[in-house]
Image (tube, rainbow, N blue to C red; front, side, top):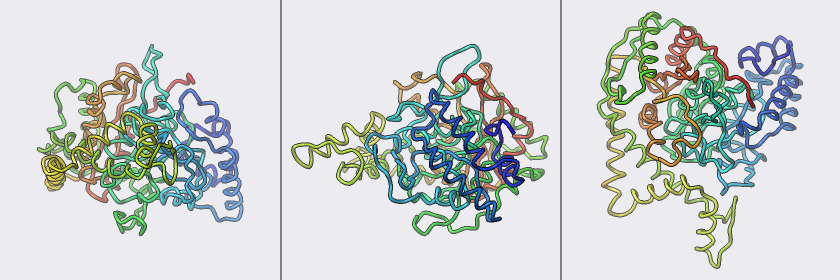
Length: 490
């Protein structure tokens, strides 16, 4: 087989099982593709020697009949996941040179099941961003380009490197994290599939923290089934994470292709926002029609506190970030910029180590947690968060899942919104509610806009009901028959 990088994860695993090719062969093909993709800046750290060593070990296991569920599959790892002995920077200068002496639980699970690591993927600094432009290592670039244009486009954020690498066929799948839409929005921008599972479904242990009550790991891949296969390995209870859910992990792939007849799908009226592009609205209507044809019942629902979601999110997330990022002081690991005394060393290290967006969010977070403002902002935001979760609980009385757009636009040009933080924050308008309520959400590629750029539809489910999302997602995937691919320019 010549084009090993063009396979889906499922097809690659089937090929490895039938011995059509070895893990070393498919890994070498991906190592070459990564090395040839430098203009995309998707990978910030490449580990070709480690990848081939892991691939050879996988081939040896398979020869003995001891292959795991992901044995021999080359994956990319978002640089927010700590990987033992491999630099893990969270996209920040302050963690340059940090090589953890431990492995995150999610990546440990992947290696346990036989996956191969190609390297670490680019991301917004500390996962703070919607365009991958806050990375200390420069922006990742979307492999897609607008028809007739040469402008470099964002792959979305914060998991921009993961999205770019999957879309450009540099890996069979990738890990990602989602705090306010950082899996789903990049998936929509790159024509890939991404799922943020229920909060607590995947362990946060060994993932560099941004906002601990919102962060959740999940997979990105080229098909709904591929993300189901990856999530099965990534998920599971972890006693090292006190927020980890002790619940059975189902065979998510078994839900793909399952009939959705009789499922009730809610359409939240508050998501029809003013100024939404006609193409996004038309795609949403198309998605509704597809699910109707598949036998779903469509019902209108109300999520009345939706309009408060972004303001609440941009109080809670920076507040938690200002607390989590206090540990970066130049004393124990990462960057250290000496000063005349301890305080000055702290100041110099943080001034040089943190980028502008991270500093902005630390300032916002410190402000809303300060005496005199805690009650007025942070406490109020937590109450709003509870109301948003209650809205979803009410919606589940009449429906099994929700269908919305994933993002308010297709991918935009790098630099287009970087001077306007509010415009950038509005990218998360359809996604942050899911994080605030701790629910699972999935983005599925469903069409292209007038410029030939991909657009995604979002499915939102009940707590721990990712299975329904995989069934509905595969129904949309089948109806949309999205086969467009970016033309190679890199």
